[in-house]
Length: 137
Image 1 (cartoon, helix red, strand yellow):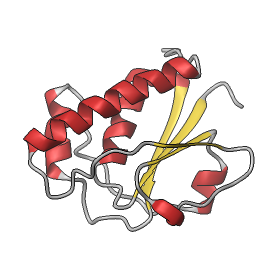
Image 2 (tube, rainbow, N blue to C red):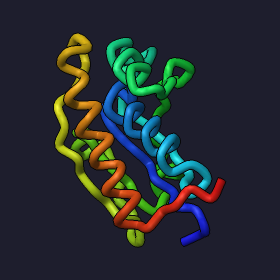
Image 3 (spheres, one colour):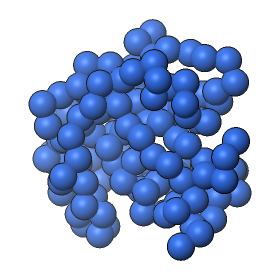
Image 4 (cartoon, rainbow, N blue to C red):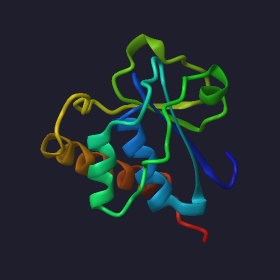
């Protein structure tokens, strides 16, 4: 493992859960992490309710765009966190996998997205603690 922990968040559309997780990890992990997110069937844009929910906690994910999941992204990550992508996520030896069973915010209003956002933040904080990541800024 390099000096930075490389984490890939994967969900089907790469429009809600994985984008919020990437936003939190980027914000909380700072220079101690390399953050990627992708989807097995990316949407055209990031979920507006997810963007609004993250803005409420001071994290701007409005400029992010859903990206297609690639084998290279998985293979070059230390940790891959899946969020409902099922068998679409490739598995490589030597990569740590976690599955975060979280509700899909697609089609939900901000009231439904807030608790998902808060759960993601808690899981990202636990991930940083588990891998002893500190922001090197």
